Amino acid sequence: MRISRLNIRWSRDLPATAILFFVVACAPFPFGSTNDISIAFWCLCLSAALILASTRALRTAHLWLLAGIGLIVAGYAFVLHEQLSDHPFVAPFDPIWKRASELLQVPIAPSASIVKNEAFFALGAPLANILAIILGIVLGAERQRARQILWVIAISGTIYALYGVLSFVIEPTMILWRDKTAYIGSVTGTFINRNTAAVYFGSCGVVWILLIVEAIRRHIPERQLSWKRLWRDVSQIPSHEILPQLLALLICFMAMFMTTSRAGVSLSLLAMIVSITVFLRKDLPRRFGVWISMGGGVVGAIGLLQLLGSRVSSRFDSQGLVDEGRLEAWQSTLRIIADRPWFGTGMGTFQWAFPPYRSPNISIRGVWDRAHSTPLELASEVGLPLALLIALAWVIMLALLAKGISRRRRSVIVPLAAAATATLALIHSCLDFTLQIPGYSIPFFVLFGAGLARSCLTYGAGPVSRGSLPKVSLDNAQERDLKDNVAQLRIEKRV
Image (cartoon, rainbow, N blue to C red):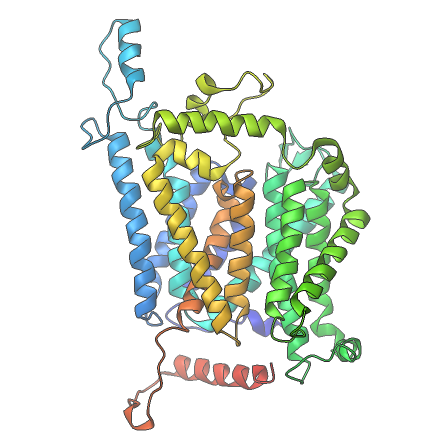
């Protein structure tokens, strides 16, 4: 691993970049940043970085992206007003307040939310995600910054994975300085939930495996890979350029498998297989090359499951893919949505809204404070219109990333890593609540923003004649950046 990859010279973006890297690296540390104080601190840091960030690298396409995010913000603001206001514009008051007033025989001011003012406190995590993706777009528009975001996520993720493995071996009953009350037989790193930890380590593994494949591909001079000479070409790569990355990937693999999360491990392996296939799609044989790569990847994943994930396989055998309790909880959540389809029960109120709808087929053990399906929980809390708007934003984001991947040959790794981790997190959040944990969502929303920024740079770049090029003057930092870009282009031209 070369230190120059993370070399940050002085520029107008340095303060904002330093703050952003600090947030990306440290957000998973305080127990996944699930408490209000941690979320508020990260929001302050991200806001400060956004104020200090330079917008010189933004293009028209980036402004359209920011306008789309502004639409999401407007939707949140309208729903928040309706749920917090004593005089909402169109939202009806929840009938629970009238019934409570009649039972207590005292006047109670009604609200559109079933818990007054809870929506204000629940806004922190969505706000942090919005700030993170905006900063990813603003700073990730520069190629060097976008790649540095990848390295910061990968390195910090490896440190957390190493801590998770070592803490499990030395003292499995502790998470940092607190007693571990759940998942004592599984690695959780600094997270409380093993499923979130599995997706986090798996997402970092996706980033590492793409960095490794890119490094290998860069050292092979032929434009088309020769499978007969592939092992010989790989063996000639200097060990100091590839072994540190392989070791980091192995650590993330160990931590991921030791979480014993079924969906987290399976979806992470699938994301890695698809990412490698997409990255090498132009190097694979035209006939059945993609299918052979996918099949070989699946065989390798099954082998890894048997070698490192025996406990994961045993959970598949004993419990299947999805617990029966979750299916019942999803059906109960659908009934909440049917009763309050427009503005929901209020942001952050699921744990109070769920008990009256709780299915009798669910075990009486424990408290369901989450729906274990982020889309369903979101729709139950904010209503279907805003939930559908956010779903549309996800579809557009994935489409833009896919288009950027298909059009880019150079520096495709950033949009590809963003698309792979976004798809992984989104699918897993349909079965659990990964994207509701700020310790995971903040770093990877930054990556999503950087991937969108790099994807949009492929659009609207028509041919320019020599005589139409304007004369520009560059300062010292810009001149150094230009020289670095030219040098990197010469290196990657063989790819």
